[in-house]
Structure formats: C-alpha cells, structure tokens
Length: 198
Image (tube, rainbow, N blue to C red; front, side):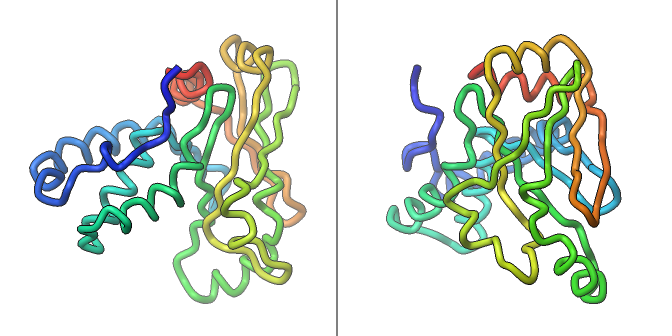
C-alpha cells in the first residue's frame, strides 16, 4: 500500500493553490463537518486525514508566503505524523476558550486532558487516546495545559469491526471535565474510512 504521508509534490505552489483554493477549502470544510465532535461545552476533537492535513499545510504556506522547498518540508515534517495509518485515528483536540479569564481559569485545571479521552465502542470496550509522540513534549506541562493537543487512537481489527457494527461515543473523563458525545453515523463512517485505509 502506498504511503499516505504527504511529500513536496503534494503541496501546490502559491499561484497554483490560489487557483484551486476556493474549491479545495469548500471540500475540506464539508469533510470536517463529519469529523468534528464536540464533547461538552469547551472540548472539540477534529479527526484528521490526508486532506485536512494537506489543507493545513497549504494554508500555512499561503499565510506565511513560503516559497522555498525547505520551508515546506519543515511543515511536512511537523504535520505528517497527524495523518493516521490504517488501524489508527488521529485527532486535534481543541480547548475552546475565548477570553483571557477563561484561559486562566481552565488551562491549569485541565492538565492531562490529552490522556483523558477515550473512544467507547458498542459493548462497552474502551480505546484510550495517546498523545501524538512528536508533539507531546512541546504541549505537555505540569502546571498548565495547552489549548491544542494532538491525540491518536490505535484500534485492533476487532475494535474496528465493533465501531462499524454499533453505536460509539467519544468520552472525556478528566477529573475536572467529564462529558460524553455519541458519534453520528456520518462521523463513524468517516472514521471507518481512516481505519480501513480508505
């Protein structure tokens, strides 16, 4: 099976990207609609795939006017680990706070939240998220958490089939924040495509 990881050849130069940006952006926004799961009032997970990561890199290159291959390669090195391999899900976890007061109140309380997320499958089996290794050391501190984390879920073939066969929920079971959100059928379908290498 060909690698899902992005290469320099996958990233359009700025002029080419401007010509295709509107259609690509609309497609990714629609795709993310089924990949975004709100868990309680302030935590959202967006499940990433090759297209969502490519969009992130293209937009960063556009915003920062990156013209050299070395600059793009640095972004590829940072974001390629977020593209899930078959049997794995990858998500960006956002703590959605809008004021300085909320940030000061919540971020110290939510230390460790990236280790407090789980996928609960039909029959009660639980797959716990793991922080994505390349980013964990930069985002994890003892006294205050970051507002963005990257997490991965590794599923066995039997767990993939459990996700396919019945309802599932995303759960946050942090001592300071306990919420669950059932996955919509369209979300489960998108995740199954990732898990099966689609």
